Length: 127
Image (cartoon, rainbow, N blue to C red; front, side):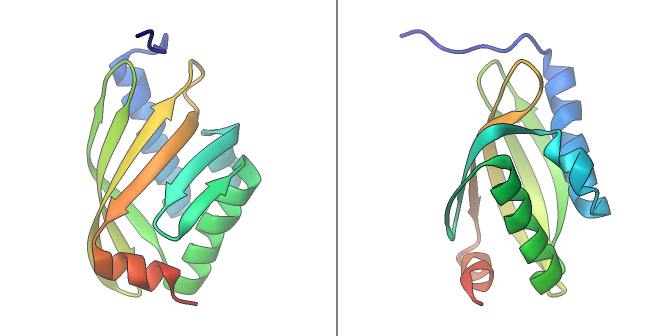
């Protein structure tokens, strides 16, 4: 089985991912856009979101509605994946969250999955 590997070092990948969370928390959406591939597919608990602009809009909505903040505790990377262990604060309550993602040679996320507390999933999905 052939696998896709990036040219970035683990240190560079980790820095890229941490920069994305930092941009999210600073509400720097232009910087955050730089961290996503144009055709990113993110598998959120509320359903799949495809495309950079749509993923950014999804994040903005959570910021506005929930006061969302992401704090990475650990970021683990290898040639194929990145895993971020996070605290996700929404409406003043903190939940555990895990992001698993693929990163291209330019350090952009191409596909990602979110896994978290079922209580958080209900909160995110509520309108």
